Image (cartoon, rainbow, N blue to C red; front, side):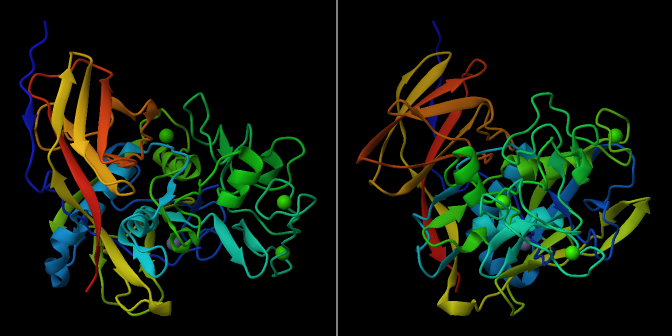
Length: 431
Ligand SMILES: [Ca+2]
Ligand SMILES: [Ca+2]
Ligand SMILES: [Ca+2]
Ligand SMILES: [Zn+2]
């Protein structure tokens, strides 16, 4: 007989993480500055990497001038950190913009995930071509102009694109050129990925990009778009939250170190930590520079060969005066009462009062220790449908009824001191 001491968590903040966010203008997975100020083969690592392996801690903080926004950005910052630390490749990461106005609202959270990708060294794998769509990022080649044709399928960004002498800057899976899956081997390094188009699978002419049009037309994946692809934060009615395989591959390739071989001593892992209001963090979030939507300042220094690392003090800036009458919205969480209906050593069933069409979050902690809140070691379903993992430390779902039953299974045994908490996710406008 399993006796659990169930407790309900009813207070506001579960996570005491602080975050700093950078802004980026940079141009498969592609690294910042590659092909421009740096060689076409440039691999850009996070701040602090010097070629020796191990855990690289990267701090994110909110600039002190914006301390009044600390509680507003808390959810977005903590979950952005979780998403990049967990490195889970998801599909369907474009979600309905329930708490953010579909027209005129811009999602601080989704944009932060994207900008932090820049602040870790990733560039846009896509370039937007006016009137044509999105193509794989490249140099202009010797003729100094972009040569972009969609090929027989009439869609840009696919394997049959005609690109003249443009040199690809996208790293692709050499086995299948598929930006929406990772190799079953788990190996992501120069033995499985390349940006050299002579390594493409037979018949392919160019790297496939992680764009949502490509996902739906070629891979039967709806609402799926690489977080680093440009333009995904301004799709009316949708917010982009969570990584796809192409994003994960970019970070994982860099993590294989200077030798670009996974499993050797120069490999590293990244632990992002949100440290709250801290203007001296490695990555600092601001809301004051007045241009565009959001940007991350990128500056890198050489390590050796084609390897670079970002300098500290990367700034992610949100323009507080958005063009086109848009406004920033912070997703913020409000605690909800959650009832334990049933529990065993292997599962628990929760009930909460909900409002149809609103977004909710469930978090759990096996021990209530700081840092133990996680969606990793559990799976959850509502009405027989699994709740998709987003890589965040919450399960997020949109309620369909006035009451929602959430069933959670553990990969391991549920601890007697486990905590569950439930929240409604609301949108708060930046002002
Ligand atoms: Ca060219
Ligand atoms: Ca094409
Ligand atoms: Ca290595
Ligand atoms: Zn960007």
